[in-house]
Image 1 (tube, one colour):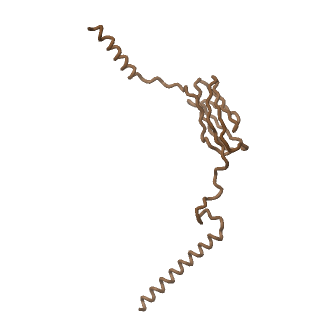
Image 2 (cartoon, one colour; image 1 turned 90 degrees about the vertical axis):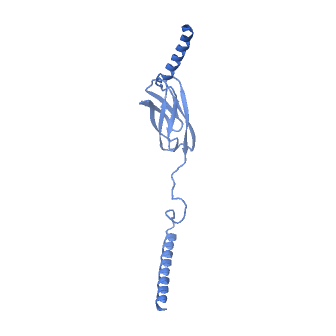
Image 3 (cartoon, helix red, strand yellow; image 1 turned 135 degrees about the vertical axis):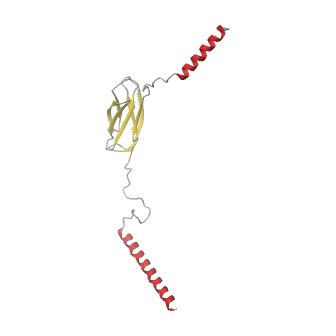
Length: 163
């Protein structure tokens, strides 16, 4: 009877040991390249985060938008900063990471036209108004209406006191 239960007991103990064993540390085996931000204006800077599975101190990152840069290891990542050419046209540009062991990763950098608003939004006469004459006319008109209201209230009160 003992010979029958021994293999079953060993199997259960082995299964439990596998479940309770601490997870082995994950090696940075993933190859990737990320851009922050991934959408920029021509002439702007972009931060590059990358990873190569080999224990390397640097890797090459290149794109038609900014040329080639070398990403250097900091902690567990490869980091670099690139400046997009001021002449880059508005479109998506492939960005390629080349690891020393031959592995590659790609992503896309989107270059857009000027994304900063030139004037405030056209929402009315507030801060978005660029014609000073209109604003002055509204102020004078508002003051005239307030003055008319005060005079009307004063006359109405005076009539009530007399009559």
